[in-house]
Image 1 (spheres, rainbow, N blue to C red):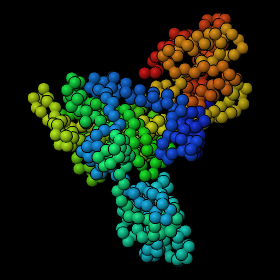
Image 2 (image 1 turned 90 degrees about the horizontal axis):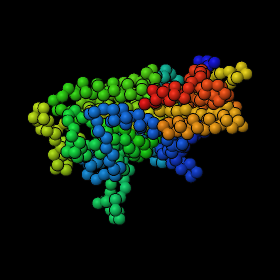
Image 3 (image 1 turned 30 degrees about the vertical axis):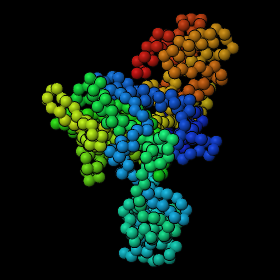
Image 4 (image 1 turned 90 degrees about the vertical axis):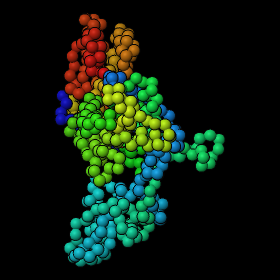
Length: 508
Ligand code: GAP
């Protein structure tokens, strides 16, 4: 029997190791030393990712009457990115260390004055982690000891480098060298990847890999309206790759340079109650995350403070997830007014209006935009599903089992078919025929090697919700199989029809 499900202290390490060992995620170009910020998805990883995508597409597009899907190109006309504001403003603040040549995101590099008896005796710095405050406090204590200064040390008050005054920058030590004087003031670093389109390589052929999928929906707004028989409110959804030359990709697949987004632009009447629409979408997104198995305890909401919003934005709320490295943004839901369509109308000269039959008015619709990263959901799913438990084997001996408690909706393998013994042709034949039948509808795994307990463990580790064992009762008695459930490890007899009904109900 299972005891309390437990997660190891170093959960991220355990997840990275499992993901590599069982073929979920690999480092990109690993044999060449890897490329920072890029990842590959292995045989089980692609299945899990595809299931996340498919669930979103089905729930967001197919099962709704007010959302249509599109797929736009990754490289778009460069004017798109000028109009959207990305060429001028899609930047992160960058700080260089002139000595080590390391680069830091200024808002992730923290510093604090070391103040003793009210006098500043120097500065300490630390990269943003879960324990930045503590790191800075310890560094300040060490600094004071090193300088042999007597007196009362004030508790550190961390600030990030975007808040550093010019006279402070010269005194803040670089995290790479520990010495002051080598950090540059923050400057704007554009995160778009540039490329050239066509045979000429000059300024006229510069284009960009898209940093978000959203602009595809705005640029195709008129095409969809003219061809899609849509009426307000309606949404346009897209799933696709986006690229950002992040200064510091980190936390595994959480912040990478190539990632996948699932975005939807929900167009509403200019006089509509945007707040109600915004709140509605926040709740929809939250419910959707629960529907694929994320625990409610790990989700929270963060409303961006008004003073930090872009001038056109009416409000942005992020759904946050409790990752092992801290509570971080998973899904952003923004009320963007009519900014994007207006920008493209002005830049292209093509009006982006909607004629509303009901109000007999022509206007530029406003938009609510839920935008989420597939890779971030993937990581959230692994982080909350992973457990290590102590269980008893068939002989009553205690052993460790690693289990991914994935929702059947997204589990990469839905069911494993296991003949009890591989040297009994009748068992194998029945197992193979069931396997073939299941395979037409579901991702199924066939495994005949090793003790049955070992085979269950292999499936637990990759999150397979059910194992079906074909045993002597199957062929000699009533044709039923043993159905073993992953989380409870309970077993019961089940007919083929019941098995298909169970899968049909649980996998949607
Ligand atoms: N169109 C709006 C937009 O792109 P965003 O907050 O920059 O907004 C939306 O991105 C979502 O995309 C984020 O909430 C996150 O889930 C995902 N995302 C953004 N940058 C990412 C990165 N570097 N790596 C992985 N996912 C990322």
